[in-house]
Length: 553
Image 1: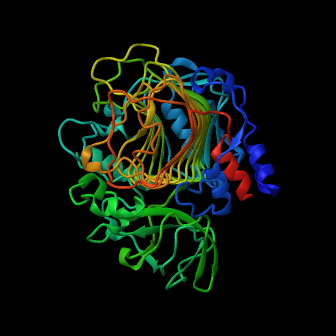
Image 2 (image 1 turned 180 degrees about the vertical axis):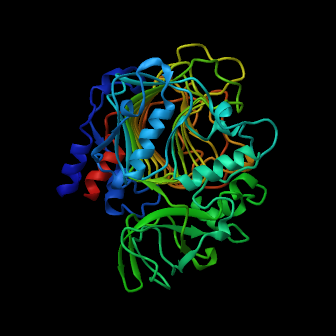
């Protein structure tokens, strides 16, 4: 038993959704008495620097806030010409209403019940603008065109005929105007736009100050020049790798395995470096600066650590209470997606999506260089999709909770691919919590994602993970799967103690390998932990994110 206030919080956090236990009894085996994981006991003594479990209790909008703001209503789309008749193109009217809200400095744009046809994408480019329908069962946007038609073919930086709409862009697209303008210009000139916080011309962004050495888990750092810093400002912590790739080794946990790994030929992975982590400043006292979240990595002199400027972020914006339904077309062959995509947050910080369903999409919900955002009560439905959820280009500290991937309504066409909940591109401290995945998989898409958590999820594991060899390892350090119920018993990146360095797999029913069997990227001891294998729902805490939230209050 855990003693004191931690034990009481843990038991409260583990008391949710107990009815799921009966539904998974056939896979999890006979019911067992609740057992507190020893890894949890360890974590409570060392939450910011535990070797296998990341500290993710602050992930999500405003550090995991349970309520989103309700800004005043400043526009209704019907006042700008939208008609819920299902046949009139309402995209111009909806975008006019959103633009008016932006000019007003923010506010809510309402969409009354009904079906609104849109022949263009819907774009939120100003902060503090909320697009709110009457509920996902009452307000529908019916999208008739794809991003290839609307913007142009988005070619891949890797050549060939691959479409980057396979992992970017949405028919509801939240991105700051500066990022949107540069991306569209690059697409139309057939150039590849880097999608991160600083874009292709990274040297144009101003260094605010150098940073003194610090350790993972520190929240207060020492800077050389605090003059450009103030509480509330969003900055980028930027770390450059050195010639021997010690930064990438550190992301993988360090030691002989990462040291002997061949990094130089991982060209796609290397394109994500320098590493960029956005964070708000909460206090400046002399040269001592306190951050909103603890450092995700060490800060070492050989990585030229600095705080820099970036593209102005989109913040305080959200999409709520609607369904985006694309015209039903067959799913495209792998990597040839036309761009019938759902909702994407790009260069967004402290933004959200709540009670939104997407249907008949190529890709459902996307986080692209997005951080500290929450997707709550989202659902992917219809004919099947390539990436129901994707998280990439250095997206950090996001929360996806109460999410559903429905079973596809039509058989998958030949040559298509189904991934699931994707994470890649050095993305870290993202959480998927309380999920119902009726298809798909846990798609770690290479690109060395680290310190991510999937917890309290039921999955019919029928997808396949992806990732090009040039993107490097499947996992970095501190990847955690906690209380996962695999209804069809297939392994496939569910049980990761043999693959992920310094990882934790806790509370997983017995699974077996199938035709996609991976080998570890790193040699030697992975320092991974496997606990309560063959058990689900009896593990306590049941939900790792909720338990960490309670612990950190």
